[in-house]
Amino acid sequence: MSRTDTEGPGQQYDATPYLPGRGGIPAHRRAAAKCQGCPLFENATQTVFGAGTAAARIMLVGEQPGDQEDRQGEPFVGPAGGLLRKALREAGIDVEEAYVTNAVKHFKFTEARGKRRIHKSPDLREMTACRPWLAAELRMVGPDVVVALGATAGKALLGTSFRVSKERGALIPLPGEQPKAYVVATLHPSAVLRSDDREAAYTGLVSDLRAAAEALHRAPR
Ligand code: URA
Ligand code: SF4
Image 1: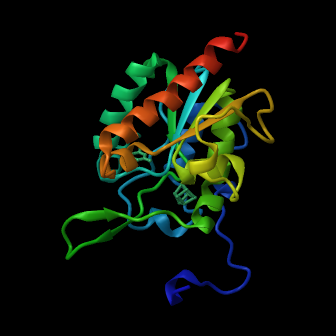
Image 2: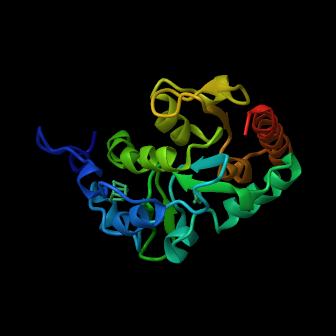
């Protein structure tokens, strides 16, 4: 662990003190805009809270906002979002009816010579700190199906032993707060964009999303 990753004992990152005790999604979005539960707020432009309606039956969870999302304040509006929307359409999922969010609500990046901002994966402490926002979204939306896009989302939803390569495409009961919901994990759309065999990776993503669509159709309304 590098020096900057270690804090004194007792230094806890946690969004909990910033959560409003009450209210719905708008109240939570306003409160999250002021979150300083971990150091990621310092360099990012803004909090990117989830988007969509509390009535959504399906929730999509990514990792964290990317460069475009950080600038625009909305999840999945960049290249990964474009690919995701295409895959959702092909799988028969209406993105307008989904609630879309991320496991971590601030963009983490390194700056290459002060120019391009390069995505950096959030670490476990940041994921854990931000988890209360995701838990609140799960409570408020109460989805039937949750799609974990990639390993970070999978771990945030199912615990740190989760492995996307082993468990993708299967229906996994969401532990804890939403016992009636199922998680379907798949690749992150950015991983598809980076893949050597993009076509195969994309086909896999669509196939996992179809499993989520089927689970949605089977769930009682
Ligand atoms: N990647 C993510 O995980 N989330 C976004 O919102 C955009 C890119
Ligand atoms: Fe708060 Fe999450 Fe942002 Fe950290 S990443 S400051 S916990 S909203």
